[in-house]
Length: 205
Image (cartoon, rainbow, N blue to C red):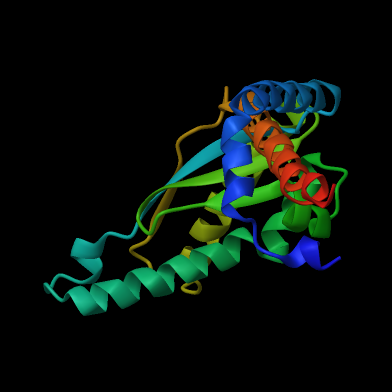
């Protein structure tokens, strides 16, 4: 079995390069396998709701102090993320339109993508496109309401922080992974497997 762990020789690499016809056909076969997997077991739908977050730096820090502004953004962003994933927000989402648990929402269904200042994207994955849209919209809506509530109570985010939901109806939605991703992964996986076979198993013969 020592041949299995020995590095490939120059002859092995030349043999790989000479098999360009095989690689071309192999890439096509791998892509077809990836396409078959996509249509037989498609990925869930993904809907996206957007909330615009404005930290109002000019009002919060009128002095031109970059370091203070950096820590202000970092601190307030962390607070907002904690609100987005808080039990209060997710439990409300479950109560409004989901048969999933809070743990499932955190681990499998919801995801958050945000810059420090600007549009925060709230994603929801589900086999049903309408359910994905409803979950994403509800999550963003409840997040905005919770931010306003905690700001008004003098707790949570700074009073200068503003959150506004900009997408409510007709949310963008599509598959969480595209067909092109399956084609690419299928081709790479097939070629990788084939190269190992040629370099090692064929070499042993």
